[in-house]
Image (tube, helix red, strand yellow):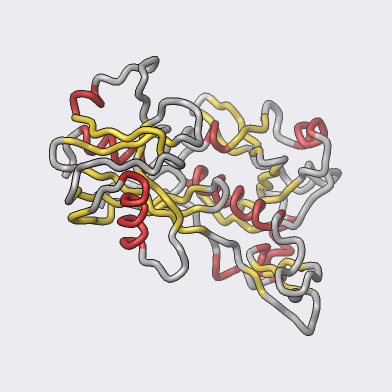
Length: 304
Ligand SMILES: [Zn+2]
């Protein structure tokens, strides 16, 4: 078993069994020890400490003057209980004033890989549930407004004739590293700027297996058939709601036929070529906190 990817580490107790206890959650919300992680327009509060970047929780008194959304229980880390809350309708200056001294608001892309493991997972959970709440104000069946339950993890339609129940949405995505022994196949996405060569990824369709989606995506994007496929690891990817499922594959065919709408360029690389990449060169690898980068680095290092 390999170590977990960024955003997927253990250490956050989600307290799932307590979410339905509304009395307990009401106490959490007025407990001086509860740490509120105040979201502001897709940014998170962080503190730069001597030990590195940490999430900056505020207490209920500090945030009382803000215009706040529904509180959502994140869980417990090292004995402290954390609650996510959206303050996007407040002014940035008021949010900053409510945070612990020295705290700032940061994009998760900037700080995700710098946070301690459990806090990175909490940041991903925070972003996922807040975006889900923001996108789910009305019932998808009847259009009535929704009301939160289960410590913010369930939304219920307020129309009694409908009574639809919603849970946070997660979109499964497969991402596949294809090798043919001594070479690895990487592609550059034509829709994204830059020179990043990475694995092939795509969303799983209804009625499709993860393995089927992996083989389909690779064939669609570069025309290569797979000989074998095995699971590597998974990674929550809250941009906005994916779970990335990483696979290692060996190629049955090596000739490249590009889907030029999606992939601008694809090539087979040797380990020597990838080891020789420089920061200002024409080929770059994906971001360091991604499962794609981890699979590529593992292959370069000769992991089986
Ligand atoms: Zn409804």
